[in-house]
Amino acid sequence: MTFLIIFLCIVLTAVVLVQLGKVTEIARTIRGEADAQEDLNTRQGFIGMVFMVLFMIFCLGSAWYYKNWMLGYGPHESASEHGGVLDSMFNITLGFTYVVFVLTHIALFWYAWKYRGRRGRKALFMPHDTKLELVWTAIPAIVMCFLVVNGLMAWNEVMGDDGDEDIEIEATAQQFSWTIRYPGQDGKLGEKDYKSITGLNALGQVWTDTKNLDDFNADKIVLPVGKKVRVRITAKDVLHNFDLPHFRVKMDAIPGLPTYFYFTPKITTKDYRKNLADYPEYQAPDPNSPDKKLWETFNFDLACAELCGSGHYAMKKIVEIVTEEEYEKWLTTQNSTYFTSGVRFSDEDPYKNDLFDNEDKAQAAAFKTTFESTLLSEEDKTIILDKVEFAFAKSELTPLSRYQINHLAAELKRNPNVQIELAGHTDNVGSDENNLTFSESRANVVYNMLLQKGIDADRMRAVGYGDRQPIGDNDTDAGRQKNRRTEARIIAQ
Image (tube, rainbow, N blue to C red):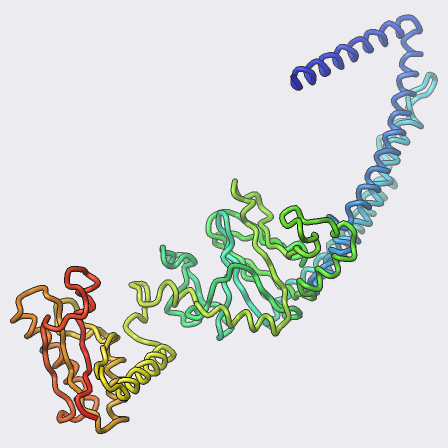
């Protein structure tokens, strides 16, 4: 029904316009073509003057009304130190262009009124005027030169790569999300290579570059106030754009061409919210949280300023500016690096056969605690060497097994009166005789390694028990894996 009414209105409007046209033609015939044309010129000139006034009022009024929301004034002054330079450049450019806009707008409609067609008036043709051409060429050229030089100075101030940044982070765009990578304790981001991208290595980090090992990904951008930040910007698929409007940061993310930007936050998120509380437009309740006002739920945002696809709206990420103490505290909560949580000990890990110093120390400390508690135990004197493993169906230790054997040797040296039995066990797959021989062979491998570490032979014995002492269900894979083990039993202390 609504569509029908709209359609009828359009038809009636068209009919009225046609009829007005016919009336005009009849009036021209009755009054004469010249009089009718002069009346038309006067009417159109007057309408143009009215439009000029209304349009100027609209432009000025809307600019003033939306200046706090769209032009970066009021509560939305720049939240970064360099933003004032860009805002100043914008204001200067806006001043020049707005003066030109107003003058040309007035001249356009004023001339249409003042020099409208009248009987007896002749047009003055000016095919060439050198002075006039020089004026309207020189003035724009001088203004443009000033604006370009001013822009270059601002660009050099903002983008000056002096290498003294306090923090460097990386933002990698893809449809439709951002991956934010932080450096670890070394303060440096590791190298990347697109050829290294796999299912486990989404960014293509080069794991042989040790700077990558402590890098971590964050679900939001957290930065300390007053610290200079360098953002390394990349893209994995199409053109994106890294846009932090409150900080006056905006840079394309281009596949295959890394870009960057510097900025220094000068106000925390909490303080920015307090400033917003002074403006009535932020006293309204938040539609998503009716129990809170807009200023209370405000957050700085990272957005993509390119229309990168149907999921473009999802390219939003929270940016939180905090004090330096809060930033350091936040860093301590980011204890899981991408390497350790997803790549460590996988086939893509170039260090999978070795432990890092911190891992070795942690394993040694845990083993020492277990060894000492076993010494104090009055019943169970058995230590399962859970890190001692063998190659499949072989009596050959895996590379990582050497670390726990080293830890056992260290504890035996620390406790010279302790004597142990190295017990080998298997699951029930295979014959009893083979399992017994196999378990004894593995126990002897550990025994010989301890001998090489300086443990006296009279303090140890190696025994194979085959599948006679299971601790798991041999009917399941998990149970059989538990049964395939090597133990150190304290037989004297």
